[in-house]
Image 1 (cartoon, rainbow, N blue to C red):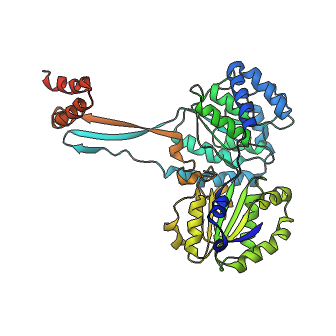
Image 2: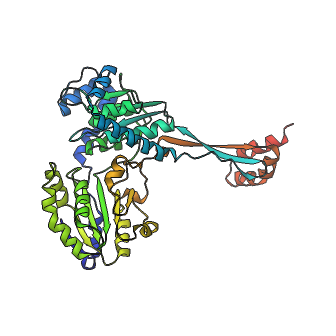
Image 3: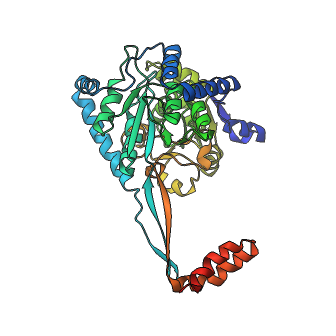
Amino acid sequence: MKILFENELAKEDRCSLLRRVNQFQRETDTTIKSLCLDIKRRGDTAVREYSKKFDKIEVKALRVSAEECESAKRSLSPEFTSAITIAAKNIRTFHESQRCSTQKIETSDGVVCWREARPIERVGLYVPAGSAPLPSTVLMLGIPAKLAGCKQIVLCSPPKANGSIDPFVLTTAAMIGIDEVYKVGGAQAIAALAYGTETIPKVDKIFGPGNRYVTTAKQFVSTDPDGAAIDLLAGPSEVLIIADDSANPDIVAYDLISQAEHDVDAQAVLVTTSETLAKEVLRILPQRVSEFPRSAFIIASLERSYILVAESLKSAVQFSNDYAPEHLIVNVLHAEAIVPSISHAGSVFVGSFSPVTAGDYASGTNHTLPTSGTARWASGVSLDSFQKYVTFQSITKSGLEGLASTLTAFADTEGLQAHARAVTSRLSSK
């Protein structure tokens, strides 16, 4: 990492710090478009061919059997089973609180309007399992899908070399009641969910993170009228830490490292008002990095990350809002006082005892979050992501009489006479 000073940055240099790694490439776009259209046309046959080509695996049965689920359960330790139970409870509690009660509003005499939530009927969950399995993603996507009342929840995850799904992923799915699991990963899983095959059902919306091939596939199918909607386009993971001289350098270093170990393209940024803290973190980082087995990932990630020494806490917060991080850690004295000034972030971790790890796994908030600055306008996955809202209105005759002149005035102005007649015919009928 390198240390930069805010008061020495030109405008264009500051803008360059806000940019992210470009996750899309023209060659990737062309390849993935061809793959998606091929699976759309040839179904299971194409899925199997791409699985063999990219994952070097030939899968006999795409759907996971009940016997495989039971075998996976038996392979897990009681400690991890307990961890799933605790995390699931917290995630369920937080997402359950997001339910909105139906409220009927009388906008004028005899005119009542309201809206009601309806679940998205068929959803597809994609759970990566490349360099590390992600059973936590099963909880983050599966629990709100269940709470929303989605009628069909389909999960896809890449098989291991022996043709089985990771037992942690499979057991977690079983524990929250998801039993429709398919052994397919990568862009081919996204295409199969979007278009449906002989074996894998078509869904209405696809959720879940992945590499640039998965993300490009999600982008393509979401623009195809025959495809499916998606949750969001998630880029490489990222964290921004706001810290002052009260922060412990070790804690700050481990927070940076824990984000960097995700992926070589992950970005970890420290914005601090303390030059002393910046220098100490930079000094201890190499030793701390060497403690971890994924040090190669961490080193590559930190090489494209940086430390910014800000002129004030106010300017540190402004930089964070401009950056709009996926994860934001506020490790300063009186951290709660900073919360009202935070405008753009996916998920915020307030105070020195709030690591991103908590939100990743078990505090209750969702870890599927907007990246690449999209937190300026987008939210992370929530209960609402698995629902849509239908509006209703009920109007009495007197209510329509009260609105009639307003309605016909608009209809006449817009040259839509039948709109006006739809009103007047009701009032003139016996």
